[in-house]
Length: 412
Ligand code: PLP
Image (cartoon, rainbow, N blue to C red; front, side, top):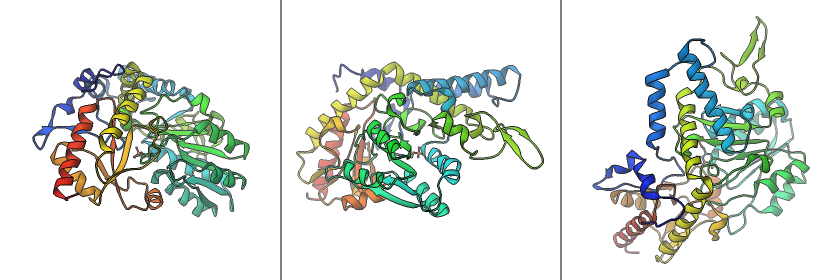
């Protein structure tokens, strides 16, 4: 068990009902947190409380339930914004990171990207920060190019600077890679991109859940993340954008509540962020997201980060001595977030993940929605163990035990 001075893991585990269940008769060891995280009782309670006490639509009705729901929804927006050093007025609730990049693709990209413009992404992106730009490049007649990677799995800054000399319109990159774990230097990249005249969009899906993030010091024009990867419900996330940009952009979807006035031949728009929240929003999701942010704030993001670095160090020590074990991404744990993507001899990742599942250990195997990166690494798939606040050294021991079992079966 982790005797961490940072987080009381035993106490944290008691807050997560799912961790009491068994899988194939074994204790659940949940190491698939980069895909989605488990939910503490306080988040589940916040959802049940909303549905059982004050379920109502928001921003419409003057009755008590409507006012309580609106207040709770807007309170969550303030909490989520404050959690990352942003303003509530710049914080748009969306379905998740994927919807955020697509919102920027339509509402910003279709207006500002012109024929022949350059869009820059990187080879370590999740598909949600690649495919929208491919679609945008196609619809606008723009060109999409990628920043390359160093052999250690970091962004090749020479490659980035070369592309910035071509004056791109947009630079899209992840704060943390969901496979390599690499933590990119957002502030430096945004400064360089701005000097080159580019707008920046940063995918924070794997950073905000794991690191202290202060958007005021990072300088990104747009920044996106998902609630479900940080103890919140699925179907809710945010796009945070510079207010001026959000005001200048066209709406994303048309419908109720995003308008100010509707005439027969045109409409005018509500203030941001409401201009981008058409129709009935995910009230329960937003309230649950607020409860998740409360939970993480109580733990303290410095402590969350410190806890994950300790787990990473322990995991490297425990796993790298296994014959045939190969991990991807920077070796320095200070440069990476709390996950390890790896391959084990020539055991196929799906086989390894199946054997681990029999031991109650849940990891991800596959291409992790990062096929460009898989090609760079010259593999079709990897395993990925990703840690969070309820993981401990005994989880890493269970992972190692399961890998050894696979080694015995496959005669590694
Ligand atoms: N970006 C990164 C780095 C991710 O890891 C993920 C999800 O795995 C996403 C974006 C997409 O997030 P969502 O599916 O919540 O929209």
